[in-house]
Length: 438
Image (cartoon, rainbow, N blue to C red; front, side):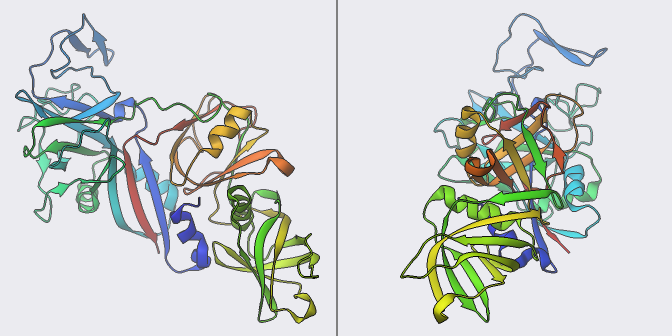
């Protein structure tokens, strides 16, 4: 129930280490972020109007041709009946990486592109290539990198930069219908060009006949809860944080005069509340621990303690009390309460007084699920961007809220009363960038 990325980042005090791993999930920003092109003769029924830079649609043409206005609900790769299809996907990674890293020095450890198949078809021999034009955009076609200029491709279907290693990047399928391309070398090669847009073409090596369809950025997956939410808060480092949990099963152990609290909870909701407390309490925070149970004639009662360390994602090292009767270990149920601030490395989307629909859909989110935040009301800045889910905590009993912890950095922002859209984007193309901050 907890994203492995979040567990790795938080466990063992990773944020105090010299090197900090950071993962960025980069999605397309709009339906113009991906498209497909094909080798069939262009339809004359759809034209591009240069004066206002838009497409206008005349009577419907044949779909199996290189339409200037394409259906973007899906992508196509492969060949059928002599017609070839390629998908072109556009990303602008520099601004996203800069936003996450600030002035920190970093190394790019791995870059991967993931696409989600439509249906049960699985075509093998799919490749990713780096398109070499600096002008390629959403109007790309089989013959030209853009309709905004008259320049044509030297090679039909797009010019590409040869890979540095000489090895073509091939896709690897997983059982859930996701294909992954390791673009680490390609990303390094692209970075050296200074181009603003990373333009990747997915093509077939011709070893299999058939057309593979993928979800595109324009695939319709709906929204989290109400289409327009007016009860969102984004919490970041330093924001005020009030927490009360329900009872969580735990083992309290003597640890050199201090107490190690290790969760032993099997209930998913109470476990999420433990994680919510663990990841929203900074080191040095003072909080209370309540042990309401009497186990084997032993109870700790209510204690005020100080958070010394987080040895793992599942444990807290605290000072301020000892176990009674000379015990070295005590299994019980504990409740946590604290008034603290959000620590560095914790990123929270808080949904206050959520509707039943919002609650049900928020609790259905799963680790690493992809979300896109868009603002219904201006200004479109701050947290209007891409995130992945770390875990979800239902805290309605005491706080009437749902908290969605995110893997990516948030900006402190209160959106209560302002329209916010949380777009579910699980099947959409995503560029995963794994960094190591120095």
